[in-house]
Length: 267
Image (cartoon, rainbow, N blue to C red; front, side):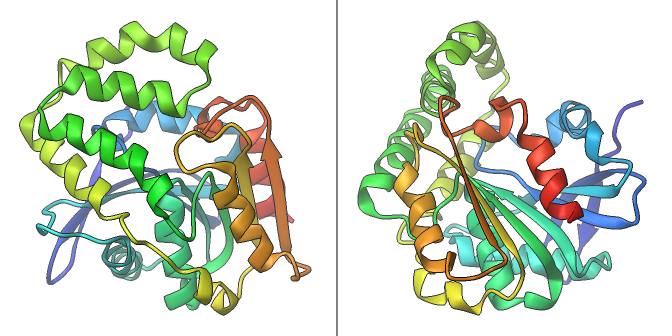
C-alpha cells in the first residue's frame, strides 16, 4: 500500500510530510539535502525503516513548499518546529541526517520541549569553508542546469565507490525527471548551509544525543562529527559511533544503522 503524502498548513507556509508505523512513541526523520524531494521515495523509506514501525509512529518531513530567496538552516529549523506544533508533536525521538541533522540541532537548542532524544547522522554543527566546497560545487551544477552531472556528482560524493558503481546508471536515469523547479529549490537549500554554526550553543541541548559519523565522509568530513563529539562527550547521555567504509550516506548504506537507532531510541 502506497504511503499517503500529507500537508501541514500554518499561517505562513505549508510543508509536506508522511507517516507510517503504529507505535506510541513519535520518531521524526529529517532527511538531508537531495536533488529531488524525498516525498517521492516515501514507500522506499517506509520499507527501509520497517524494523522500527512496531515501536514508533515515524514521521518524515520535507522542507517548506514555497522557499524564500534565502533560506538559512536556522529558518528551516524554525519552520520545521512550527510544523511539529501544528500537528501536535512534542518530546519526539528525532533523527536528522546531513542537512537534516543541522536542522535537528537547531530544534534541540531553540525548542528543547520538542525533542526527547536526538540522533545525528553525518552532520555538522559548523559548516566551514572546506566543507561548503562540495555543496557549492553541487549548487553550481544546478545553476548550469546540468541535472545529470548533479545527480552523478552527488552520488559519487555521498556513496562509497562500490555502491556508486552499482547505481550510477539509475542515477543518470533519475536525472531525466529533474525539473527546473527542482534545481532552483536545490540551489536555495544548498546555499542555506553556508556559515551555519551552532558550536557555541551545543551546551543548550538538554536531551540524550547519539552522533553517527563516517571516517570516509567526503561531503562534511569526519571532523564535523568529531567536533560535535568534542563538545558533548563530557555528558553521560552522549554516544558516538564512527563507521568505516560506508561514506557520507552511511545512514543509507550501513546494514546495522537502523538497529543502532532502534537501540538508542528504545533505551
